[in-house]
Image 1 (cartoon, helix red, strand yellow):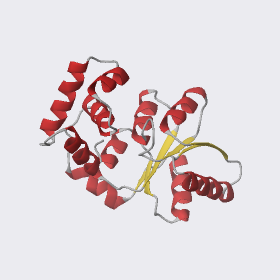
Image 2 (cartoon, rainbow, N blue to C red; image 1 turned 180 degrees about the horizontal axis):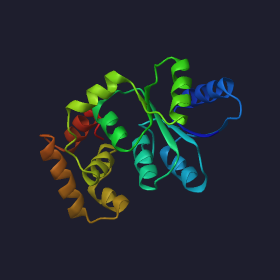
Image 3 (spheres, rainbow, N blue to C red; image 1 turned 45 degrees about the horizontal axis):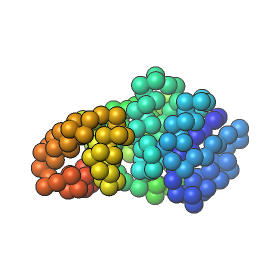
Image 4 (tube, rainbow, N blue to C red; image 1 turned 90 degrees about the horizontal axis):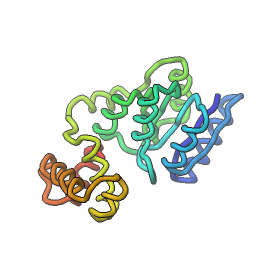
Length: 199
């Protein structure tokens, strides 16, 4: 089984790779430390499973999942995260993620989840899945991307360059996001969206 492990914390990544190697034979693990490198690997090689964090430099685990879904990829996705935010879980479900586990879950639960996911099942902690039902994410993908870059401290001009759009369009996206979240400014909007798991 070919596994792509995307995790920006070196110690966590190393521990996960060691655990998986010990748990089963015939596992090949490719480790990457950010979402952009994970995307490059996914474009160039087939993996049976993407085991990914959500929040990491470059592409997020959710963006990788969305891309795989758009490609109609057969690669299964399990998200490992510190955060059980409703917005994250809801988007993970929308993007066809097969497993969603908190990082503090026991190691045997991870191994069990991988086996079940590879057998075609979907494993998401019932409490986490239930929490995802309640709130509706008001942001669209364009507003989310602009807000995420704004939260990283980028100027309107820099965001426009990154997204290949006009500065006026960036201002519109950010303004819409601020209004939808009843925020006072872009920083406040990013904080609210992050808390809810919408960013």
